[in-house]
Length: 145
Image (cartoon, rainbow, N blue to C red):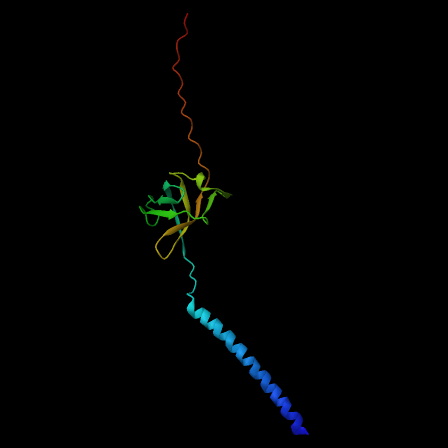
């Protein structure tokens, strides 16, 4: 009688153990094959810059460095403007239209595998003050007697 009860119990335990093996193997196989076929995602390194805008349009901005104290003095960078590019004036959000040739700016950009540099951010300290209006006073004319 002991053998009769022991045999079905052992068969049930062995059956459950074997039933779990294919699921574990299948999960490991699909995980390993997925990571083996897909390339690891690389995050492009962000590079900081500062300089003066020398050209700007809807798709790109060119930044020049003329200060001798700045690394890469004399270097010009043309950065692509993307939908992810952020613009700030001081601490306030801005748009591309708020920037013009001659503005001193800073920010960061990334370079993709093809060498294209895309602006992450473009920042200037404050809004450009309008140039004082040139006032020319008319020469005083002597009063007629």
